Image (tube, rainbow, N blue to C red; front, side, top):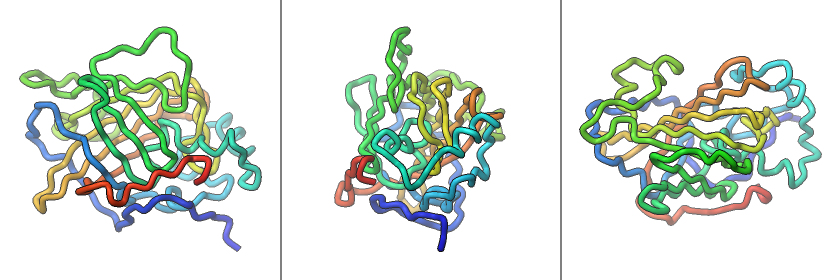
Length: 253
């Protein structure tokens, strides 16, 4: 019998390997990420579509302490305190499902997920409060990478993720998240700690076929559980309406 468990999740799109490269020369006015989006599983499906067996930490630069904690995960004893940990800020964008992106107000971008029913807020041009209680989604500060009429305010993802300088310049939105509660990078209990910092880089892509996509590159830095930054990406395709939107709480996944 297989040690892998299939996930009970809202519908998604599973494809073969594809490469989405951000178009250079995007207009640097405020980019429109609003609407409904579906995740397209084009990489790492064996770790994203099923619950991996305990000890399957392939591709994650997990350190000795992280491995010790992850080895304590028990798939037959997942209580309410554990059920929502795969939906924390550092892992939620890799969870198959759908997003609904709206403007909460003129300076706050809101992302709702149907898988796990989580809500994230990206505070543009803001600062993280000095006194803040950690939450599952943490506190996210965002900025447009190349402001209208300006030069890149980016922090050099190209050096971290191996991108060329030209592609890094096409970046549209950068998000930094801290004050996160400890949670999971992967379904099988791979942890990140309260000391973790999350950086995300969102690129909007207008395809020649008329479809709109975005790619989010995620960098998790955790000095307690990771030996080096953990870099991943996830692809999302825009949908025309909310007909497939199917929110399911994380406790019921």
